[in-house]
Length: 253
Image 1: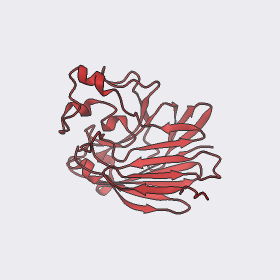
Image 2 (image 1 turned 45 degrees about the vertical axis):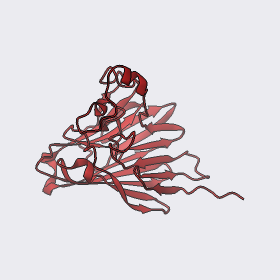
Image 3 (image 1 turned 180 degrees about the vertical axis):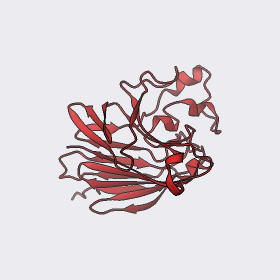
């Protein structure tokens, strides 16, 4: 006797995660994984709110993965201290600038600010909400990220943000190896013969930008072929009444 895997699942602990799949009958190969957590957990990264997304056999939003600790240690790089300004967070694989999450004011996430899953719905269109507020202490008043599998071939990411006097910029990020074509209201990604549409639903007037990460920023960073960061940058002065909903949909064919 076999038990079918759930199409939506969440796990708690030090690094809470949520997973959506397309199920056994999904021909699109839908797979999503999102996470909370904080940098100070063992072997942790500043990646609360980040996600991976696969569709049609292509991993569109990627995690940069780990890199050789030995090489870094031999070079005198301090990997193990986990203070806010320690060496570890200079690395693209460890800081928020190398993950598909939010960044504020081009600053690092708060190292001990834990992002938690605060809501989870296992249904036809499963969804999860993460409270990212602790990761942005001193940068925002609050931030909540909602992931929704809104069809068998699309993912909705919605960020509800309340800014503070310290907020200057909010940056939505997605890390990818796909080729990116900028279009009105978003972008079109192409990889391995497949296509993915990125729609900036909430702020279509703001042009998407692309930052090349190959070669990476630092000599010690891990090199990943064709790596880039897609950004949607929202200036705080455009946020009306201090609150904003940032909605992006990723959809395939």
